[in-house]
Each structure stands twice: as C-alpha cells, then as structure tokens.
Length: 245
Ligand code: ADP
Ligand code: MG
Image (tube, rainbow, N blue to C red; front, side, top):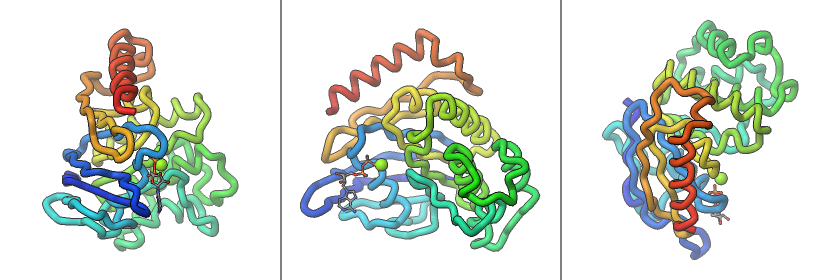
C-alpha cells in the first residue's frame, strides 16, 4: 500500500503553463525526492496531489484508485506547517487519526518521544521552536492513517545544524515506519542524503528531465556527505540542474 502513479499532470495559472505533463511513480515504501529550483511548480504539484487544486490534464492513481482532485487520500505537510494554535502538541498530532476515529494516545506519546518532544505533549505550538513545530507536523503525518506522505521543503527554513538533525531523525523514523514519501526540495545534498530516487524538474513549464536511482546503503549517516561517491553524485546532479535551467 502507498503506491502513487502520476500520469501526464498539467497545470496552467492565468494562461501561464506551470506543469507540462509530469509523469512519475512512487512505489510502496519508497523515498522519492523532486528536485527543482524555486518557482518551478513543486508546491503546485503537491497541491494537485493533495486535491487542493484540480489539474487541467492528467491523473493521480493511489493503490489502483483514482484520487485526482480528491482530498484526504494522502497526508500532506505544507511548506510551513499548520498546527492548530489552540490545540496542545498531543492533540495536534492525533488530528488525522481523530478524523478516522482511531486515536492511539500511547503511540502518539511514543512517537513524540522519538522526535525529542517528551515533556512537550501538553505545550501549545507557540511555545515551541521552528524545528520542534516541524517535528510535530511530521509526527502528525506519520500517525495519520494515509500510507503516502508528501513533504514540501520541510527543512528549508531551518539553520544548518537543526536541518542536519532533522534529516537524520526523519530517516530514522521513516526506516521504522516505511510509509511512501514524496519529498520536495531545492537542496541537492538533502535530496542525495534522504532519497532512494531523485526526479529533476526542468525550467518552466516543468517536466521531469532526469531520474536518478541512488546506490547509498541504508541506514545512512552524516559521514556519507564526505565520501567521494557522494561528491561525484552532487557534481552530476548539479550539472543536470544547470542544464535544465
Ligand atoms: P515552487 O514550490 O517550486 O517554488 P510554486 O508551485 O509555488 O513553485 O509556484 C510555481 C509558479 O506558479 C510560480 O510562478 C507561482 O507564482 C505560480 N503560482 C502558484 N500558485 C498559484 C496560484 N494559485 N495562482 C497563480 N499562480 C500561482
Ligand atoms: Mg514551494
């Protein structure tokens, strides 16, 4: 469960073509990253997958069922996480499971602990740092019943150290849960470090110009950043991005 097939997705805003026929597949339990510059249409793609927007053309199929234009089929964490300010951390992370009627407070506490948020269960979002709020949004996505998670540049607003910590944490927790993840970033290193596969977007109107299967073994740690293999990949993908702009 958790296989997404996107076929020929197209979207135009005010006569300007943003996405020009994107096709890709994310397999069950896979971590796929879409890499593209700012303004290339990454968030638009996520709004389309999440059903907040309707594509002009194309379909999304999740586990053999068409979900084009439907909300609630996938779990979506927007670029700045929208926690409910009047709900505690614990009440925020069980939101998705509340809707489906299967709240598991013990699991929620366990996951918050894993996210380094023990002791904050009854705090409110405004009492947390940006990194902590981001972790709360992840825990909510992981606890939601959907098998497919979309993460839109979740670390782009964080400082370098917090970002590294969060990437490490995300990998650990993903390896335990194995939900399918579609991740969006403009950061090449982040894409290389996290993903099984990278899809490179072209300039506007966006299509997928390159696809890379990454050979790095898991579990991964930050030593990977310094290996020759990693640096070679970084160079290759940098050149692919330059060529596509
Ligand atoms: P990215 O997430 O890759 O930075 P976006 O998907 O946010 O890019 O935006 C892609 C392009 O689509 C931008 O030029 C943006 O101005 C335009 N755009 C996004 N949403 C809308 C909208 N609702 N109406 C009109 N234009 C939009
Ligand atoms: Mg965006």
